[in-house]
Length: 314
Image (cartoon, rainbow, N blue to C red):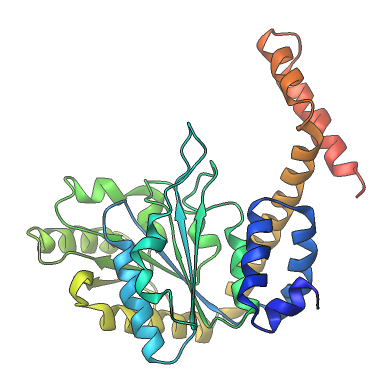
């Protein structure tokens, strides 16, 4: 059997190998993804995002216990930042979820951003497809500790949970702009701390500034204390409610089209990036010297390379 067939039969090692090749941008990995694609689209994808230190990993750990009690297979993808100096990453989230390491119904994969902005790794979407094809019913993605505009998770997840904690200083300043707008559910973790009511009021005030129609989902607030499991059942219930909303929404066809649009554009961007990378790999040092010495115009060079990438044949 080839790798795709082995993955469809549930071979964990084959999946791990393909995921490694996807991360390393091995060209053959795309061919395997093509074979797997017809078997995708069944998993429910949950994005867990928020600033660093809010307890995202602990919430995922507890949610995984909840879903496993229901008999669901769970895939977990955690994204950690890459050092701009060494290129390495401390994949700590996997360490914090060791309790699931012996559970055959849970697959955990840590990924490094490798310099990608937006809170995810470039290969996250393709890795999701691998787990989806393997039959994992729920896939949870934990973004890197994000700032105000790292919102790529909305391109992948069906439901986005924004985790915040009281006592972050100016709480809303820490989660404003793009990030606040992608949340389907606000999880106020470490709710035993002072300042919870103030944070709830601030979020409610923000939500009141937007008018929600009868057929629109209004983000909900759930209080959690993940280290002891408090609020996890409520959080799971709200995730399911949002799932029911988007799949039974009267505009569900529009929702599917919008997701298909984002998926297609992401594939196009990835293909162009890989083509460009293959063209400039050997010439990059020469190009950099030309630009640094003002010997050539970077815009003209970029246009020429992009033109070659688009017209190049495999």
